[in-house]
Length: 591
Image (tube, rainbow, N blue to C red; front, top):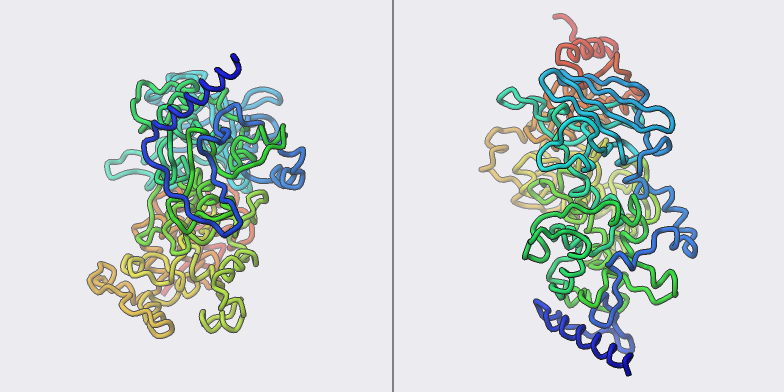
């Protein structure tokens, strides 16, 4: 009798919670006759979003050995790592790095802590103990806690913060982090440092990085902004009071009455992180019941207080776990970072692929996993050849181009000259070391991009041709009328008549310059080599670093600091560039 009363009370409580829904559930649409659609979440569903439902990657590996083994070698696993002799790739063996009038001392003894000391006359001395690494493939940043000095802003000494120097792995070279990310010019119009490594911003990773660089229970994402949820709110039916109560027992909501809160909460790293780095349950959510009891598994976040179903009727069919809206929502949790975009919606930076795809005509038809196996690492060189499986994702829908002759007639190039991706997903997004593909699937020659003088698919290969030439060819070959805007500043300055590479290298847009640098690294004439060296003279640290990496690719070797130090004072850099021009035969001949 007592058990029956308890069950009745539980059922009554659940019913009351469900009646508190803020919005009605989207209508469910009929599936193929004989099939029963299955959607994540709802009042009859177990939760896979609270800490109790997560079990860790090792439990998954007991059955899914192949995927687990591939994941062990995946950069996702090492996106964050606890600092140790095995995980720290930077040279901390008593190194001293000088930049911007200060010095950083990097010290470590085997088995002991890694420390970064920042000193400059007139600035407070700070000493950090490195706690975590960020990245492991091209660059490695570090997070640490302050052990000497005063914390900045609203931070406490216990906050793990992003440290102001990073390490190029292949080049074995330290640089301030403004040489890795687009911080702009070294010095602003008022003579102030654009980024001052000796007076760092001390961004807490528990407020920013940790949400995506680690595996955390999904419930914590309701303490961040809506983008971090991955799925648009219109696709969610929420019992907000119940979800708020679940979150409030885990973190301090600081009296915020809204749900989700309008600010990103600091994650309690010690208790919130299921796996340091990105592991199985970042995408599959809490799998404890499935791992321990072999319970049926559902894709997507599930809870008695959360119902998830696409508002688009076309998506609500059987096997929803394989549908684009659900797969892409999982990826969108992290691949939708803040940042700016080109006029057509292509991103200026990586880690925004989901947002780009959302702006594409193919968004509802293609899933991230159609091109990417989430269990296996992609190629180390993002400028390498296309994967045949990725091209098959295009012809899976556009079947008329599956045959080479039809694809060639459509593209007016052989597949070896230009693929579907080269034209419709060009490499115009600055990645870490070189330009990578935009994930906004679009047609070449977007009028907004033409008018802005932004990088275009055609001129990435035909860089010596003008933007005006591209407009003419698109009109002649594909009937693309009205691409040129005669009122644009670009047209009025008559820049479209010059070579596109000259337009891009002279652009005020740093992302456009970075793409141009990547193009220059693939060209083989003397002028393009001279153009690369010219980019080493600019006043933006990341642009110089990008140009240095491109020059090394072009030359096929790493340049040591005696040959090229992009962080050196302008006078020293000018001497090095003069010597490089001499060595490469690029000095101007006397008249």
